[in-house]
Image (cartoon, rainbow, N blue to C red):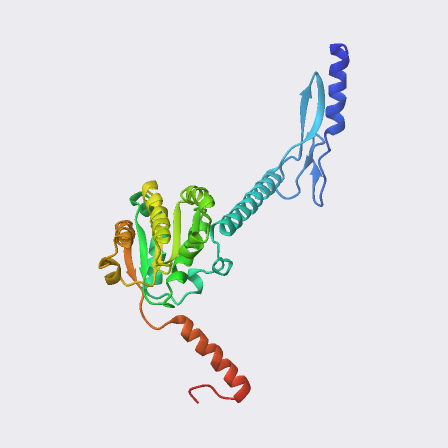
Amino acid sequence: MALESLGDFLLEEIVRNTAPAEAEDGDFRNEDGLLCCGVCGQQKECRTEIMGRIFTVPCLCKCGEDAYAKKEQDLKEEQRRIRISNMRVSGISDESLRDVRFEDSDGNENIQKCRAFVEHWDEIKVQNTGLLMSGPVGTGKTYAAACIANALIDRGVPVMMTSFPVILGISKFEMNDIVRQAMEYDLIIVDDLGVERDTEFSAETVYQFIDARYRTGKPLIVTTNLSLKDMRSQESIRYKRIYDRVLEMCVPMVFSGDSRRVEKRKEKANVLREIVFGKTEED
């Protein structure tokens, strides 16, 4: 095809694929015959020269630029929402904890400390400082840890929240891959230290996981039903090195008070009593 013919062909393609500006209510044409926006008054058409010929082509007025910018922002927000959702699903193994938020908590002292942890995350990450949440069953440790996990994920921070029983349920063949993947997260939260079976394999697996995290130089949060006294006075060598490493990495946060699980069971029981018997336990 000759260059002149090729140029004519490309020109025809440009004309064919250039949609005219869309006129809306209130739009008008200026003295040059170009379509203008009825809201902002700016041109929605302009003239340009292509290969020696003048063409009228669409252009963006201020309203059009604003609409385009909003569309781009909405697209970015939707992409962010999908990314955050995927991070939450892949990072928090217990589905029931994915909707836990600070806003739904009672705002007690420990919850306020956990909020501060999130607010100062950038500093904490640099300092490589984690938390050791210790206390009796049902005092809100897992809930508080999940609040941290979800708040950081909402900010786009990769967080993994799992438990030692889950880790110990992984086969020996999968362990290296799981440890490698887990160490890539900015924060790891591991629930229920101390509930694992008292075996050499369990102790060694837990230690390997914690030590691998230690060597990454990234923060760790651990929850446990053990008291700090029990951890510090541990005589078993295989567990002592676990607890010493955790205490080296994490600042203790003690949870106390009545079990929230017991209180919730009482509340549910009272609701049922009122429905069935017309009175609560206190009546």
